[in-house]
Length: 433
Image (cartoon, rainbow, N blue to C red; front, top):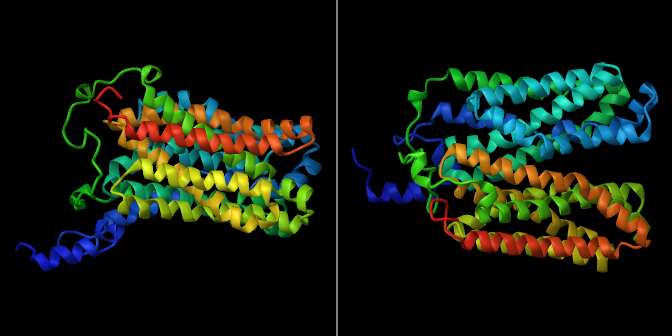
C-alpha cells in the first residue's frame, strides 16, 4: 500500500539515523543495527591504543629500563605509521575485500595490544609497530565502510566515526592508570584487547547476517552515492593520477594543517598554560581533557550544520576554521580564559576531520578511488602530524616565547580555510577536478 502524504511527512521529520535503521514498513532492520554497532566497535579501537600508553609510560620505563627517548618513540610510532605506512597499507587494501581489511585491523590491534603488554622491550616495540600499522588499515577502511554502507547518512556517520574514536581514547586514558595501579601496567595495557575482541565478534555476526535483509534507504538531500553504487563504470570518471589533481593536494593541505594544529596543541597546551598562567598540573590536565571532549561538539555539530546548509562544504569549512583560529588567537592573548577557547578548539578538532573526509568521499567517484584519495590525504596529513609537536616545541625553545608557535597555529587555520573553500568550489570528480 503506498504511503499517504502524512506518512511521508512524518518519515521526513524522523532523525536520519532512525530512518536508516527502519525498513519501508517501519520495522527495525536488524542487519543495519548490528552493522552500526560493529562499525562503532571498529572505531573504538582506532585511537585507544595510543592514549592508553602515556598513563603508564613511567612504570614501563622503570620496569623495562628504557630511556626517555625510547619512551617517546613508543608514543610516536603509531602516528608515524599513519603517515609513512599509509601507501603500503593502501596497496594491500586494493587486493583484499573491505571485510578482510577490517579483520586485519582488529586482529592486528588484538595481537599488538597483547605483545606490547606482556613482552620485553623487543616485543613492546614489535607490538607498537603492529598497532600502528593495524590502525592505519582502520583509518582508510572505516571511511570506505561509511561510503559503502552508510552513504545515505555519510556526514553523520563520519561524525560518529570520530566520536567513537574519541570515546575509545577517553576510556583508555581514564582507566588505564587506575587499572595499572591495582594490577600492574601489563594488565592496564592488555585489558584493552577486549575492545578488539568486541569488534571481531560484532563484525563476525554482521558478516553472517543475510544481506537480503538490506533494503534501500532513501537518499539524504544533497548526498550522492559513489558512481559504483549508481551503476556507473569507474572508467567514466576520468581517473588520473592524484599527484596531478589539484583538489587532492588542496585536501591534503587542509588535513595537514588540521592535524598540525590538533597534535601540536594536544602536546603543548598543558605546558603552555602552566608556563603562562601558572596553572597546576591538575588544571592543565583538565584543560587538555576538555579540549579533547569538546571535539564531540564538532563531530555532531558539523552533520547538523550540513543538514541545514544542504551539504555546502564551504560553509562547513568556514565554521571549522574560524573555530580553530579563535582557539589559537584567544589562547595566546587571554590564556586564563582557556575554558572558552577549549570549546572552540574542540569544535574545530572534531568538526575538521568530519568536513575534510566528507569532502574526500564526495569527490571520489568509486570506492576504490575513495581509498586512493583517502590514502593520499591521510599519508601527507599524518606526516605533518608526526612532526608538529617537535616543530612547536623547537620554536618555543629557540625563541623562549610561544608567539611564533601560536602564529603558526593561526596561519594553519587560515591555510586550511583557503584550501577547503577552493576545493569545495571546484567541480566534482569526473569534471576535471
